[in-house]
Image (tube, rainbow, N blue to C red; front, side):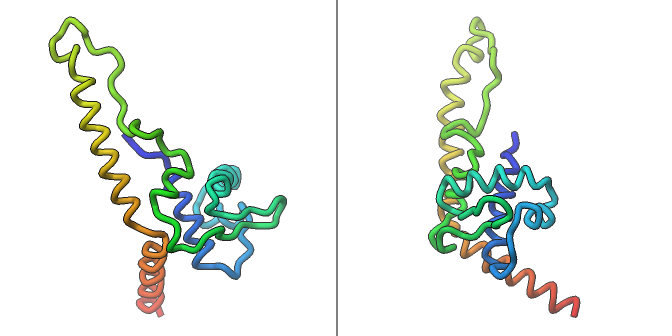
Length: 149
């Protein structure tokens, strides 16, 4: 099981918009930092725009933050980029044997636990704002600059 990379790409994009506000944030420029194709960036930016997290100008107008960092949680980003449907983070095997006592009952028992696990993960994401993440990221960047300079 793996969460789509759209989540980390969305967080990366919003972090760049915050840390480098003076730059012209085209999809090509953002793709250079993320290490992906500009088409992928445009798709993720479309999700972020639809969720009200980023402003995007048509053409080569670039992108900016639509909200303050302390108003955006990691859960907002996670949901914005359609990582996974609610209650569907974990997938069940599709054809357990209904003649087997375990096979006949495993889904209903395990599904409840999986939903609880997803809710716990989403609770952690809801507790972290982009401000907190960007502050840690900025300290990390400064620490590396100081260590290299």
